[in-house]
Image 1 (cartoon, rainbow, N blue to C red):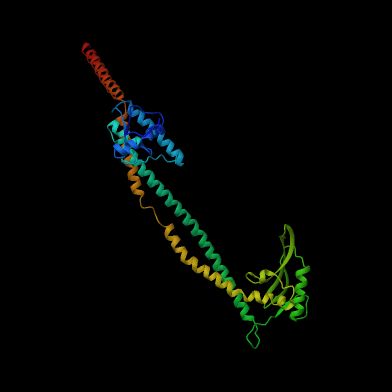
Image 2: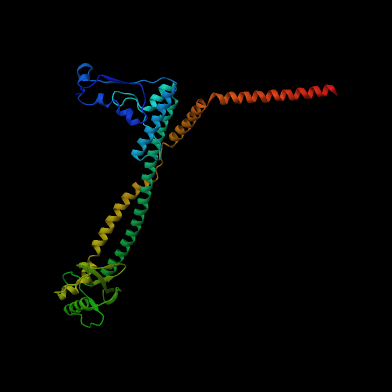
Length: 361
């Protein structure tokens, strides 16, 4: 048998699972329903019958709780019980909470669900705001510390360069002379000095300690042996530095192996690179000085909807108390009234006995 569709469905019972209620009428609304297309304006009426103030209300309440739990479990939001309440329309239909409100004749439950939704939304907004604020505060601390370090580095480098330029000697063309001297080497010839540096690069071992080997314009020249790995094997290589407030190097600390003059000029070149370092740190400081005020503004902001959230929570608490009072069994109230009346009658009886006793005396 080929099913070509239906005009509508009538449901007299309620299933135990929310998915069964949602999927029970799937055959009617699926694509290929030719009957609805030809005779019902391509619409399907889905009718669910329920009796007001009966166990149907309990069934819908149970389905509502199940569906809420399932939805929150799937979305990973079990930490905050939220219910998405929307008006009935031709696309989404009517949710379980709205059925409950209609069947009970009281919309307080629906109002409570809507309040809970607003509160959950505001609490989520506040959580995002506080997270962004904490991130900005952390970033502000980091950037402030970075700015302080950069300014200290900038100051030290500026002092070193000022010292260098104050002692530098130039030739007739304005070029700075390479007045390097090496410990244990009497010659000032750059080629001799370069060959000695190449020998140190090849044979010297310092065990990771910085060792002084000479001087240039009052700045110590040092060598250090460092271990690196090539093709997975350890390799010990020497690096050369000029030391001031900071250690400066040229060509990553490597000495030219084929040209003694270039090897001797390594340290002068390292000192002449200081202005480029100063420019880099100055640029970083300026960028941080622009960024920090923006972070301070964000970190200093306060969430402006706190009072609105407090008001909604107070409204929800009042509505919840109202619902609890309405749901309280009438028998409890009757019992309390009878108990109170009995106490009054007993008290009157005792007073009467005392009065009769006084008369006998």
